[in-house]
Image (cartoon, rainbow, N blue to C red; front, side, top):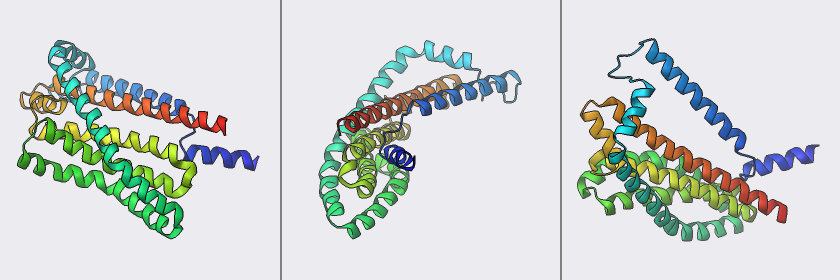
Length: 252
């Protein structure tokens, strides 16, 4: 019994736990939030200008879809390209430091602390300094991609080394998959933030433009699209991580 529990805990730490229960819980929480939103609108807790009904938000999404769809393509393209560039930059770093960490336990413990620090403080540092960088360099496809790729690389390094320094060689595949998930999400966040600061064609720009025009339904509809993209990316990568690690577990 204890061995089974130990194996279950180890599998969960490597990303082998079944994510379907967590996804179902997330969907349930979204449904509860939607119901609370509808109740707040029906009870007139906030003015309609600041809290439009879900129906108005969906109507704005439908009406402005010809404008939103190109912005979605721009944001997705930037996120995908930045994630790939970030992984290409981070992979050699992870190979070198991971090898040292596995060979020297003392270095591995220090590296684990550094990875935790980067993982926790890195996104905050990037997001706070990003507006200054964007204003100085100007926003465009290249600037937006560079900023998102930098964040993706840091996220991949932090998440990958955190797993490798704990589980060693056995954690390589889960580390890469978990790092890729973190990299993609941070790349999406930075692509949106870049557009919010000085963008012209992405989803972040659409949010700021709608807010400036006091078009709250459109702003909330655009935000909803960003949330859905993030949730879908997370769900797809979580399921992939679980499926791959389970397949490896069966083989071994």
